[in-house]
Length: 239
Figure: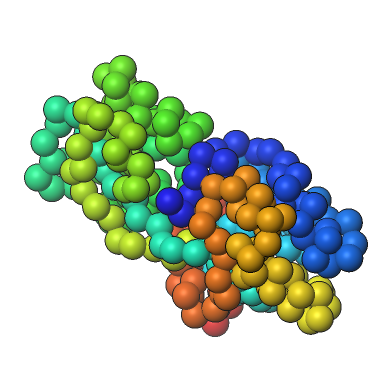
């Protein structure tokens, strides 16, 4: 599973922090904001941390607007699905105006769903959930007709059936500030990619609930920032 429940809320990651501190020879503290709206607010306002782990649409925006470099990526791909109980979906447009449980925009999965609807007036009514399990719970309580969930997680929710499988997406990217020294960026990339080879790295991966990291490439994320168009704070690239 590419994205586990470890990402569902803001928290610190002591095992990963300890592993990277040892690999880089300097103190490192890793924390992740589970709220995509707060993440976007800080990104669009110009916050520029040294190292960032984030979804493709945020990574592409950061690379193209702030000159960040992609140095690693979570292993695997992301695939989201629209799942429902008794509702039969023949056409995504049938969701227009109807309640769908999903993470708060501009989360990747929710924006990918909304991209099906070219007319911003005729879109599903998003019932915001703090996590994917919470989104499933909203459907079970009959407060929404469907939920947007990671496709790999559907087996965790008996009673929900896949109605629509969305386009496969890259996993989260690790990017670094243009001000971070090249030698430090390379050591960081090597440490992440080699995490599965040692006990400390494996503890870090288990904490993140991911299989591992691979070398990242800018091209894999190119164009995904288009999903953010229409989001408050979005800036088009200058011609």
